[in-house]
Image (cartoon, rainbow, N blue to C red; front, side):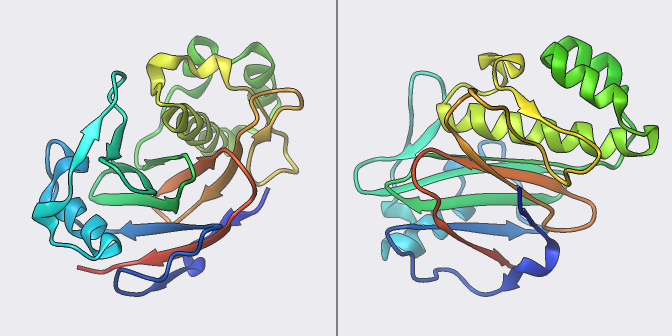
Amino acid sequence: MITLEAADFLTFTPPQPLGVNELHLWFFPHWPRAPRAAESAFVRTLLGAYLRCDAGAVQVDRDVRGKPHLRGGRLRFNLAHSGEALLVGLADSLDLGVDLETPRRPRPVMDLARRYFAPGETAALAALPEARRQDAFLQLWTCKEAVLKAQGHGIAGGLAGVIFSLDEELPCPRPAPGGVPWSVRCAVPAPEYVGAVAWLGDDPSIRAFKVIL
């Protein structure tokens, strides 16, 4: 699986032309944090730029499971924030989910894997060199959460139900054969962040952008 590296996130100002089979990722290393990011003026301004309307005219609703979506129209979006950063995914009529985490602190990865991951994933993680486990665990976590968010479930949907394959040769986990039919791309928008984007459908052309506020 190809990983989007920091160098792939090009510095541009939104919006950028969004084709029918395109997916845009916008990374904001620093953003004016808000309790409900999807409904914040900052995110509505970004969405409004794509919709060619004022931020005040952007209507963000949530479904029964809490997944944010735009009222009407074809534009789809999802977002995640961690630390000081925000990652937003945008697409035309393509269901998607994104996740973002920061590896600033060590985690008890094997204990967490046994609690949240499928047995095969836990065994694969244990088989990795100890020096790789922290990064591999976090990348696997973001891939799983991106799929669950695309489905509209979030973590409550069950991380163990979205199964991936990983080994020492793979820089990024990949969906296990016969698993959920979602596609996933790993992303490392900055050295201190790890993320992923998941979608259902044909492979889009992914364009990644960075905005320094």
